[in-house]
Length: 151
Image 1 (tube, helix red, strand yellow):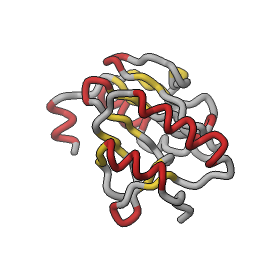
Image 2 (cartoon, rainbow, N blue to C red):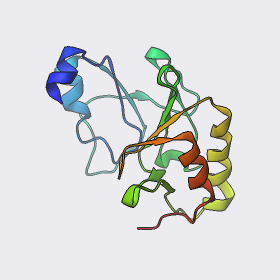
Image 3 (cartoon, one colour):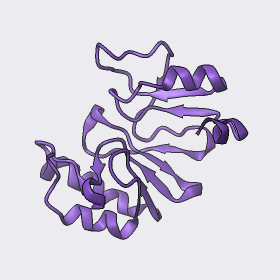
Image 4 (spheres, helix red, strand yellow):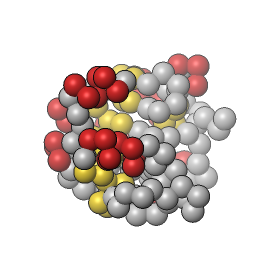
């Protein structure tokens, strides 16, 4: 991984979820990249790096756009227009390779409506951090109809 990144160093590091900060300091030090992320973190996992705020609607370098997924400050997905991809931390997961929305107490009221709004974007790919990493738009649409995954 490092060889590939060293060949084309990242200029931006984005933390999508408060408990997904484990390597942000390392990336920022190694590549002198700008870091963006949530304002709040788990008390045991606060990065040394000061992150520029990441809020739904934020526009980041490279044309990246922060989205809203109905989970409030628990996660901020990212739209990569050039790659026609949406990246999620935990809002969606792929246990056994099948894309599913991760269950929350507010699944029907907030999460599903927010995720359905994302269908207005011309994305072709969905990238998740658990299970098979890359999925299609059609798989995303099917995930919205499936029973949410509760682990």
